[in-house]
Image 1 (cartoon, rainbow, N blue to C red):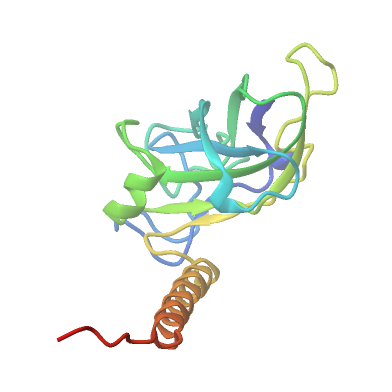
Image 2 (cartoon, one colour):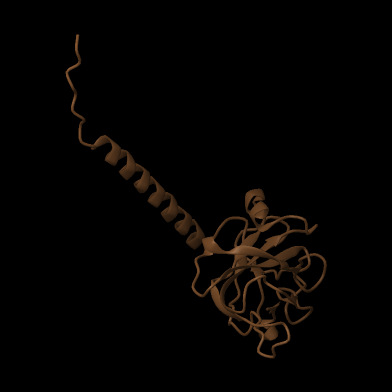
Length: 195
């Protein structure tokens, strides 16, 4: 897979409404202090929970070393990235991919750590991608699968919060049902024990 995204050079990944670091403001395009990585699973249409990080598909955004208001896709490529052609570790054929980006100025943290630390992070939608050999002229990039821009925030977007809340509610319902089933089990018969 070619882990690159140029999106015609006119759009890019930006900071959303909230930011951490607070010195970076909404609408700024991400630069070299952000990491971006592919998360994937074999097969088309896989859920986000089934995806695993592809270590070979981790890189940084184009542009300056630090995200500033002066950078843009048209001026220095900020908000875009040129990744390597990587071996995903999956067999050729259909796979599901999601891109995750996070504030990582020293490039030594993971996406999950960024979420815990409360720094800017964001995720793309889920896309199907056809994996081929690295010399195949039909090799896919994120441009060929039609990846759309997304934003990074210090807090999850409402859709992410709603998804997490739905999962937590399902666990509570399952747990409550399990307790109910235990309490509603038929009584056992007691035998008269000799005295």
